[in-house]
Image (cartoon, rainbow, N blue to C red):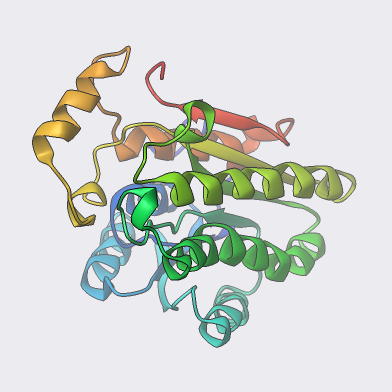
Length: 258
């Protein structure tokens, strides 16, 4: 998104943490906010090379970004992330809980409790506790924004292999609505984005990925195609910029009509 655009207004100097920002949607969000003048904490778990490339692109474009590693499914690692970000950025204004995954993409009849727990650990629990850790810093800044990345499948339900993933995102949306009510008096605005079929490499890294099925599914979207990570990033920019100053407690779909 070009610096100075309507959606990016008010982002200059804002301190942002984007989780899972090494690839896909997270990378696009980090780059869009960096291009808008925000100081971006680019978080990754394993994709250090890719996350480093995101930082490089932001910096080469005239922006500011720092690299942070943490395994959000591990309590000690997760609890160390926010203090490190605040220490290096000098505070926090915006949190984008983008990191998410599905463990064991298999028929629910074969699903085990470990896969259920691990999926919820990242998609719901980690996002909640990062919001909790961010809260005092957002209050200190006089308010802030939290955006949680969910899935459009919460609306129409998931398939037999993604029951636990969709359930974890439904939990994340419930957290979103609660935090929005709690945060309103302090001008902490909390929203969630339901992503539809988005063309990212996350799909290719899921066991059982079938490109032909993905292409077929994308064609079933009313707009006839998969969305792009940059389109999700544009909506995030709207919500965390000056244009989103009266938007909170909303679950907004970017799904091509799904």
